[in-house]
Length: 538
Image 1: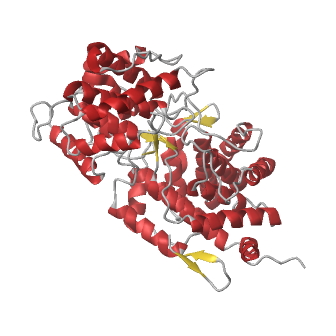
Image 2: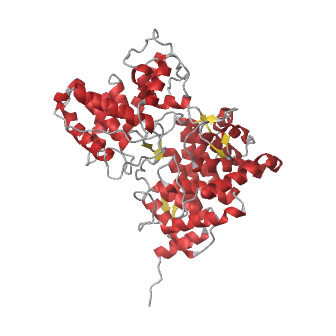
Image 3: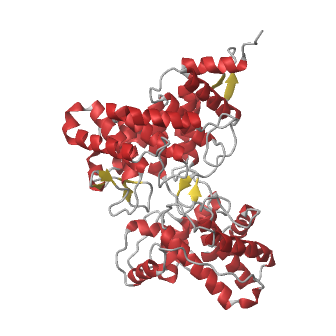
């Protein structure tokens, strides 16, 4: 981020230039920008040791192990990546005798035993396919330990958490072997099916070679057939192999948890920037592509994933902000009992998704009032639903992000713009929560202060009509200065997939949007100047 100090002493970010650079960059990386994943890399290490970059993937796992033996973030987020990395290194130790893996495996096993037997029980975050991933990996680790008792590893008992078992995995494997259709969303975690995933007769990879938009799923589908042109087993085998090779080469060995995320990334970036009024020009071909993705069932985040209501709603909202008329009727396929689900039959509930649907309906009706009769009743219901799910402290939580600041910015902005007068009190409580949770260095964050979460906090303070009180301005000024001071620092992974990931372009767009609105707020600028030039007491 480019920061210049103006004569007034207020550091300025050239948000327009950076936004234009960011948006044009989306066209150069059509698969999207996603951080490497410990979970996904571990699965590819175990499933595809023949793939380009294997040694680099092993090195990545070894380098990412925490001092306590686990991998990943705290609060239950460590279980899935630690299971995957430990199983991958244990498999390598067992089959190749790689002595460098022995000590990390020991530490990983002890960490897993500690996490799974935590006093008071284990509280797991609601991440995709966790109920399939955890029992499948525990079973694989137990098989390694049983089949190779001479490895000198500690004797540990890994207990499957309550409510999880192998029943659903067995059903999935049976369906794949029989060539039956399985829900498309399950293909994203196809690796849990083991040998049943290998060229499953009812599964056809996409035309670009993706399987469930997941490198691990693609590796599981390929199995141990490493040949480039093995069309005898499936005509799309070479496509999948080439795609997986391309992903590994792009990341230098490690792989991300999901790729491509083309339409998810583009819609979130455009909506963050446009909502904040950042000046940029959306490439016409990008806008046309987004329009073309919206079918009767909406839009998918990327090739290999099913359409979902969250991506669909943000695509529709972004297009509305860009002046494109596209009625949001495809979202109605995801409606059930006055709420919206990410996919039909979704078991969980997402506050941010329902906030994004409110945005999509609200932006459309605001620009096309004649459509009010079709959507205003649903908007009233959505606003009530979001208010009912607000926490007592004023925040919201969500199943698609580890941070309450993401859920809260999604809900607070939607309620402020489209929730009506009845939502004003809920928005004020959200602002109060933000004011009460700022850190000493001016940042906000769940585990530590981050640029991403600070950006969301600033948007809550500055885009909800919170008034011009000095406390709000001072907090926003401190948050803005944190963003300018921390320019160029690495952002942590906070977004939910099979493990946590970072969609880098989306987070940079959120930060740019927050800097832009802060720089245009006279009260915030005045507070920054006060902080640089405090009045000395006589």
